[in-house]
Image (cartoon, rainbow, N blue to C red; front, side, top):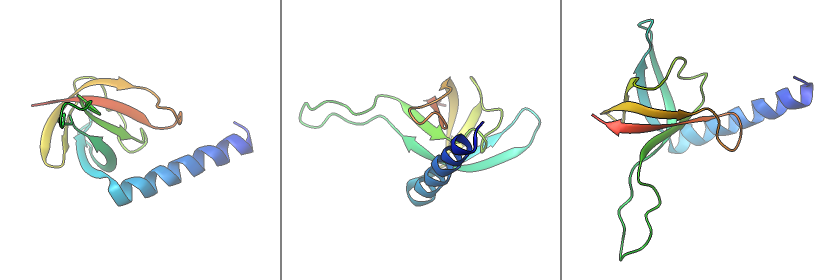
Length: 107
């Protein structure tokens, strides 16, 4: 990568870390190698329709830096905000091209 691309990637990662430090949720994940990873992620859960308005989300999901949760994949078991989940699907990149999104199923 060029220096400009490296700098942009670093800036996006730093900004995402700042956001998750401020408004994120704690995740605990044990990789297949037995290493326990903890990270701060952006967490969303199904919203409730209010006065027949549209739902914002109908999935449990996290957006995360893949460097923080190495090895997270389909069917991985994780804990978010002390609630157990199984990963349903991982979208390799979100709009910023750096973070990943995983949809979750409550255990």
